[in-house]
Length: 163
View 1 (tube, rainbow, N blue to C red):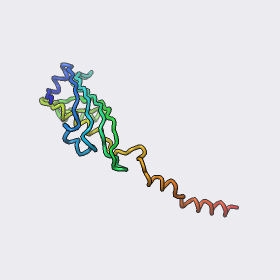
View 2: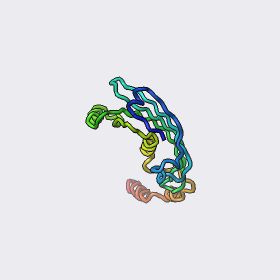
View 3: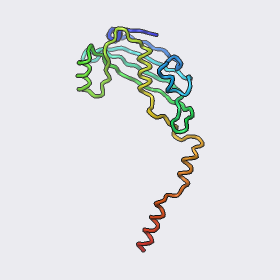
């Protein structure tokens, strides 16, 4: 568990990297099909052209989520990069987000827990309703495809009437 002063870390252009097992991410546990997987991360600090400190958090990894269609585990690939611009107060943050809607901002944290930041970004990256592209043995989809369209009969009546 790394704890940093977010603004100092950014202004000194420091970097950290590591890996966290899925089992260590307690808030993520109920979103996963199992505890397999890990997040590889890299955190780099810097200062933008407006002299605002920022953090670039890059995440990669693979987890098993539960498919919402068949309720079986499915592999999900995580690839996310977030640029978090830091502000001293809420007012400055709100003003900046009002000008630039793509800006991801955060308040300066004197004791930022990096593991919590990583878990937050993983949670934000999760799909709302994960589903396989095509579930194996999806008999319901096969039944729908084999069933004739009830409006096809009406289309046939319409063409006969025109003759």
